[in-house]
Image (tube, rainbow, N blue to C red):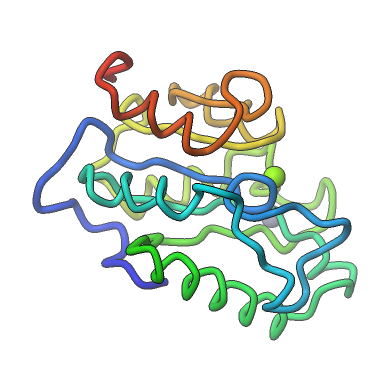
Length: 179
Ligand SMILES: [Mg+2]
Ligand SMILES: [Zn+2]
């Protein structure tokens, strides 16, 4: 996805991994699933916020539920082309994500659909150098932040704790919340 994966950064910053929800956090959320690349529209300031996380020496991991893949509302090709578009738009602002964790499952049939913790646990297993207390999660739904908080991460619920991704990144990087 344009980054080095979940290797330990050469220059580590205040956070090990910052997890980001996708729809409603990085890009405009629907109505419905984002099926076409043209339908992927970044929220104002989102790419610049991700670039600042990249520069800070943390890894950035997207964690997204995509139940449409289970129902047939979304094809795997659509999923792939939309994510490629997201990466192109981020790259245009000097931003990238280091990994993507996605749940393609139906309700109640897996251990990874948020609010289950499976996607966070997979990423942490891929990054044994990272500690949950040095991680953060930013999302627009209570189901985004609940599993992260249960793992000991710092969390930001957009529209509740802060208005936007950029505000959450400001708070993470201003030094006042050090893990
Ligand atoms: Mg969302
Ligand atoms: Zn799942």
